[in-house]
Image (tube, rainbow, N blue to C red; front, side):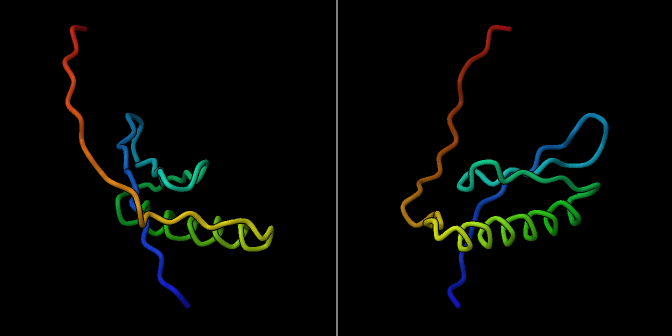
Length: 77
């Protein structure tokens, strides 16, 4: 079994908890009440997402050729 690695983004929500987005897996979004739970929920969501792709015999996205960069822009708001 091959191990796949995915970056996740955790966004703190105003009402509490964290929304988790997996950029390389479109629509793979989950939530946790705290960081630890959010990470566990993300792992489960990724596993289910990949399982669904395999069941439909679709290609599983990887991050092999993904570059990460943080871009700063000015805001005049």
